[in-house]
Image (cartoon, rainbow, N blue to C red; front, side, top):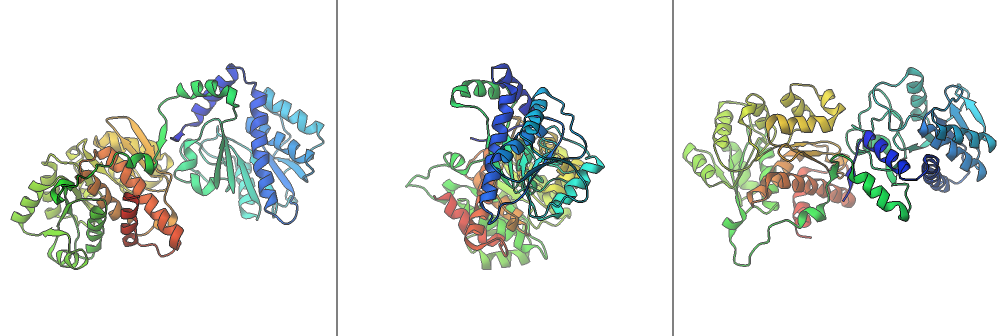
Length: 497
């Protein structure tokens, strides 16, 4: 189990550890030691010894950096502490760190144009978890210089400029090769811009075995965290098939979509639905899409005419609507019929646009799967605001539409309004940034729900399966050229292993 927390949670936990008998300066020393170990690892990857530049601010994050500089100096590394102005540390711990660095004869230098960051190893100890909002102009300029150089950066707790709570970057942030976070894992490192800026994410709780009971007590008092998905844990709840079973036992999923120029979307969804284990799949679509579907996926049934459509809907155990769906009167009428059914529904693409025009239609057993632009439309906002706080956005979606919401993107989020829970997918890769991937996810979630899985659980399992299938494809064949259709057999493989 992996849980993610806010910067405020980290501060609370830190305070309880100190109140429980661990000195604040001891925690600072342990943090610095862990960062120094990563610095040594980065140095060992180089053929020649590199200069070390430690960027420090005036808070405890800066205190961590000062102790790293002291350790580097004592080990013989060529190290210099860089600050924007003469250091006046704010806390007793950071003041002690400054005194120890000075006693070790660590060189200090105010930032100027003569400092060369190229080829250096840089420790980012400027801001830490307390940062949010806009950077000062001088800090932004320094970070730009670092990012534009050929240096490698290890960030202390969180890259400066990245919001530890949301993963948002207002203007610029340090792009680290590695980030070492402490006490508890910060959720902003795992969604939005978090992965792009934090690099390799490392963690140290900073407690000994003897201190674990105190640590666990402190963590237990924190508010409900964001939970990270793990496929092995989710797959334990998949329905077991009887030997004496038939196709009707495994659900009848009805998918609606596919229009002129977008036939492929519903075809991809249908194949993913079958690979997720659905026993029967019927696609309600337009005639030209039905022809293409029968050629590509002969297992699927189609319904074009009104009587066939009504019959298919009457037999559905789940409905997926939206992939390739045109926004017209036919589609609006179909969504109305779907809303009258007592079955779970997953909505994407065109169906989300229709839902945005009539949000009262949504039900608790529905799953909506917007990307950020679609989420902005549903929330009456814009994409920038959605991405500035994805946790708030996904909760607003689930609560506003009274359903399960999946906010797609880097660090996809799943929220269930009725249970006040948010889950995060820590898998997936940039190779999946291609048209049609969302259609695969829609079919996958629909296929799982058609077999009787609860909507929230099916959404979690579907998102994780989708992401892990993408990662497995990339591991085998690389990111470039990954197509949604490549995912289906990999989904089948993951379902069965």
